[in-house]
Amino acid sequence: MTKTKQELIEELFEKGILASQDILEKEVDSKLFHQLEAESDLMVLNSDYANIVSQQASLVDWYDIDRYKVEAEKERDDDLYQHQLQTLKQASLSLVTPNETHHQEESSLELELNLTSPHSTFSSSTISTSSSLASSNLISSNLASSTLDSSSPASLIFPITSIKTTINIVFSYENKPHKYEVKDFSTIFTSRYRFLEKILRYKPTLSENLTSISRVQGKKEREHVSLIGMVEEVSITKSGNIMISLEDLTGKVKVLIKKDDVESFTSAKELVPDEIIGITGTCSEHMIFGDKIVWPDITAPDELKKSPEEVSAIFLSDFHVGSKMFLREEVNKFMSWLNGNTGNDAQKEAAAQVKYIFIAGDLVDGIGIYPSQEEELDITEIKAQYTEFVKIISQIPVDKQIILCPGNHDLVHLAEPQSIIYKEYCPELHALPNVTLVTNPAMINIAKTSTFPGFIPNKSTMSFLVL
Image (cartoon, rainbow, N blue to C red):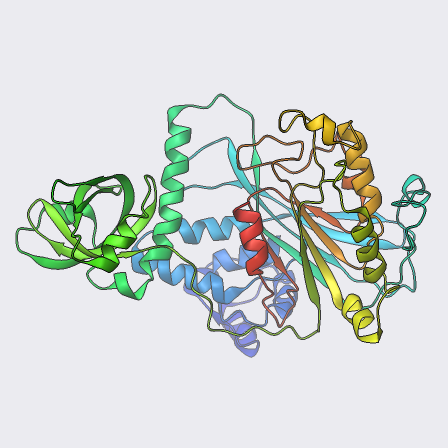
């Protein structure tokens, strides 16, 4: 039944939500009001937000969406806001296995930063698992019959706690094979520049007098300015000063760093071409006299997040299964502890609290990665290496979610972004119920609930974005 404008306003107001003008001008599905019950932090409902709520099943951080909208209005640039909206428009897919159901949304979209590549997409999904079973035997029989080795103490039938685990893939890259052109490379540099420029823009040091290079070149009076740009070239002048050629999307300018300014001069010596930096200084007609260099480092957040439930995450990498130097004994001990079979009461309790395990690449040692590698291999066939790796991680209890990305030893192309591990070479890995495969780079949000925004762990961000 269609509601009148007055009824719509009153019902939304009772939920603590204000209705925007555009939502009042369209027919609102009655199902939307039921879906709004879960969106406790939504304060204003417009047509864009209504579409997101009706099309997706995972929870949304509306504070972030509102912030993107405000930033877009301040900068008069709608790209970031529209990109975030597209990311949240997901198609739903349910995957059912015996005794357990996984719910996963998947979507793909083109990431547009004024330059559009039809061959590149980011996908976003959410995986939620909630179990209260006393035990589960979801591992296929061929894996259950084999262990890491005969002395491995770990069991393949695991107890499961009732804590709900949630994985939200903020983005994971998907590449469509095509013939690369010059514009593809310029798109990479432009998108990289804009990403880092956004980080630098909010630095207090640069926020005052921030301008573009083209505007600086038009200034004739000396004044203090801040610039963000890419380093084109770094050279030493005859007098021993450092000259930086800096460019942005509007032009190029020379920046002089005097040797008498010890702090800035020392920083300038560390610069390399194609680096994105911020610079403050005094402009003249043809040059900037720089006095400070600012890098796009990520400031630690002031907010202290605390999950309503006590859970832990483990970060691993570089298993190098197949190598003669693979640490088999240490892995056996780790699996025994993770299953609660080793350690004192406090150590066993710590193992039980682990709900997320990140493995950041180099699952296997690979084949032909470097000269004479075969002399150092215990397993000389790539599929056999991945089969052995699956046997190992199959010992991890299924109530612990495993997030995997590839590394340079894995069977994917070396250039980033790297795709997920190919299914044709490791179908058993794709079949594991508690494994989420993502690309390199990727960004993950874990432990999100209706009342808690979740974490994007610093360690996982570093591992998955800069391997």
